[in-house]
Length: 261
Image 1 (tube, rainbow, N blue to C red):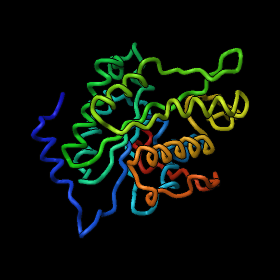
Image 2 (image 1 turned 30 degrees about the vertical axis):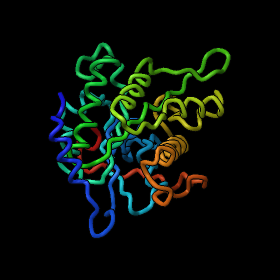
Image 3 (image 1 turned 45 degrees about the vertical axis):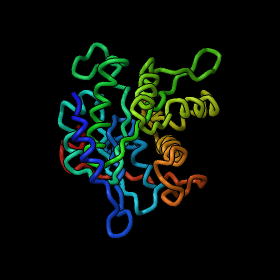
Image 4 (image 1 turned 180 degrees about the vertical axis):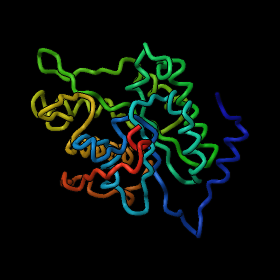
């Protein structure tokens, strides 16, 4: 399940400056429903990938390939990583966030084991990006809204964040620790206020997916981590401390059934 070292080396050699400097870059997102584009029929549910462009300068574009219900395994098996790698170019970034669906042990299509198959599949993203001269970036999964009886935010992702952290260190890949940061944010906001950040409506109490305020808050965590890890330079980022109006979030009409996959 891995590319040869020669392929990786050749891809790295392709990552050279263009026109005397770096061209515009694209941030590709491979992930699940917490990051995915949502459409008008799904509003007000909002993926954080819909809000990340608000924190990036025009020279960094976003190609959000995150899809509802996918795991690190099913995303690859459906050819979605291959589709990204067919378009990605030297200097681009591939941000990878999975675990929510990798955890579904009863579903062999999606399940991965944290310390074996989960890491194996994540390596495909790392090696694939590097083979094309792009930079892989791992993001631990954003936390769900869950509190104990004492009002403490509790983790829900088991060993998956630790397995990703270990892999990032082993492979020398930039790590955005969104799991730890989002858990701390939910703790600070508390039981009631977090409802404003998740997809709580009159008809639904969803503790996994976000409303616009939550998507913006998580996207801000991602942007700040991109700065902290020096994946992006300070001049690539904007509005890190600014209030982002929720009215900036829009939900386009789905063009065909595949948009609602």
